Image 1: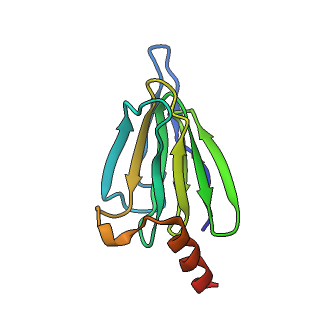
Image 2 (image 1 turned 45 degrees about the vertical axis):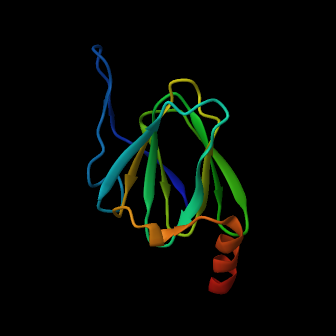
Length: 133
């Protein structure tokens, strides 16, 4: 599985829009929800990969860039719509940068927090990818 953008259903109304994330929206059972906010200018989040966990990121407010690396190539995806999410599969390095003022990043995760699931050093990540090839 490769990272991909997924449209979140959007119900438009003159009183304001509503988007709903249900079990059909993300291809995994959500076991953990958290969000990043009040990120200082110039700060970065992420900087790791997961062995088993999958994530779905949504910019609820503002914008930010998600830098992804699959062990061979790097890509950048800007999230800035609350009705669009980024599915990040296991085994992909991610860094979140360039948060706008007031940005809120919602993260839906397929697993509860488990430190042993993290690969926190980029060199270790690349080694793990080379061992899998």
